[in-house]
Amino acid sequence: MIFDTHAHYDDAQFDTDREELLDKMAAGGIGTIVNAGSTLESWDKIQKLTEKYPFIYGAIGIHPDEVGTLTEESFIRMAELLGQEKIVAVGEIGLDYYWDNETHDKQKYWFIRQMELAREKSMPVIIHSREAAADTMEIMQEHGKGMKAVIHCYSYSVEMAREYVKMGYYIGVGGVVTFKNAKKLKQVVEETPLERIVLETDCPYLAPEPNRGKRNSSLNLPYVAEEIARLKNTTTENVVQITEKNGMELYGL
Image (tube, rainbow, N blue to C red; front, side, top):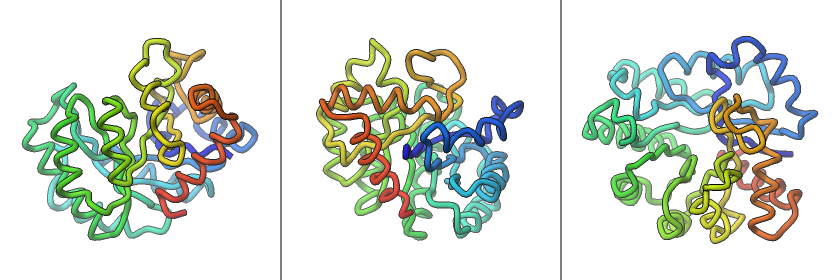
């Protein structure tokens, strides 16, 4: 079964048909989903999703664009939520210099604090990094040694992917790999061992071809698996099997 290692079913875009959609997952070949946190508001919604659906697990964290909302009080609550049985990771956390909603210093401060909390709890981390390649690498080298991590929605060079793989991390690959102009990511997939790749949607965003531009869901992941299989010269079944095992290992399931 397919493992979607990064989704956002708490998003308002699913408010009209969330239940109906999630009820279709098993029939669509989707076995496990990890719903990643991004805002303070997302935490309660994620908790409810993990309680309602046996196949949904959660990650609790604050996206770099939202770190301005974090306080010492909410950080204590985050630590408490991480103790829950179906919460399996800290994330998504990291740096985003594309939107620049928060100062770089503030982003780095809360990124490191959340990394330290993950280490304290012996939990994996889901890393968001956009146009912040050097700073992300520096923080991961300094604060992420020996930890389990996925570089979500990977968008950097082959060389950097190689470095992350050497550090024992996973490379998150989603719908973008199916885009004709995604030459760099296709190259990363070709060069990264399948044992270090995990499938993800980032839904409702980044739907693959042929549904590019529409609302994304885990049901689109077969298109991603097919493209990875083509690039790796293997079968889609093999991609699904190995990436599921990787997801289980990453999140300790």
